[in-house]
Length: 359
Image 1 (cartoon, one colour):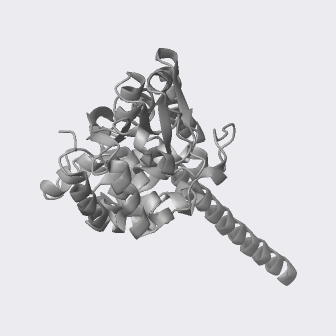
Image 2: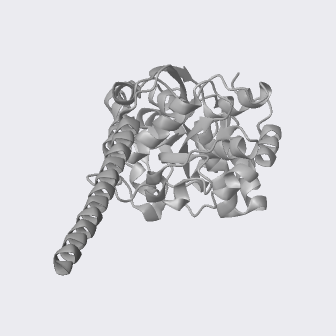
């Protein structure tokens, strides 16, 4: 009888233990299910409102249409160069007219960060981006790189008996007087990159002597980075200092122009992406940045729009893209100097340029 009682008690203990384990397992499973559901809800959550984007034009409409379809916010574009964005931000006391800054020379983004005008954006995919092309504190990121060279109008050069330049030093030759067009570096991030890169390459003294000589061959400095290529193709000048990407192929169909990769190296500047601080829809701006850099297809779509595969430098893991130039052709640049030296360089440039800046 005693054995029977002990056996019954043992069975009761086993049953109770099993029940507790089962309940615990059930609770954990239920908790895990709840977490998964919350994660799924978070990843599929749609945002409301409007995302206002400062960019160089509406060519990116398809990319932002995709963002609207997948994430929710409608998109409005504000067209402005990087220099204009920075000047406007400072003039308005850091109150932005937009939420997201998409494209433009990285020097302006660095300056904006130093003046507390940008919002920090942390996301997992940021670790996949090259540290050379993003802010170490995640205040700005690069969507690609603008490389700079020349475009020449063969008809104009032939008419005036001129050979096409091969190097940056060639641009200072006396025979090119009045035939070189460059955009104002204070407005165009592309041409600020030219100035800073050549000053780094040649040294400050020799670099400024170079630009004094170049200035003699430039009748005026245009406002936008696209002006030198379009105006050269239109026959207004024989030589333009321009960004180089696939969009110049369209100009080759309209005029007898050639694109030249300078033998002594190409200046380059990363194109920035950032969320403005104190914006009306910071949440949507941060959501776009995470959405854009986290999906390779989004970056490839942008590369197709830009006709420029340099996002491969930013995210080396991208598959199916190839650079259109040898990376060794890029000038050796310390990008950290692009922002810190900006004010000093542009003040000196303003004196050198005088009244040649296009209004």
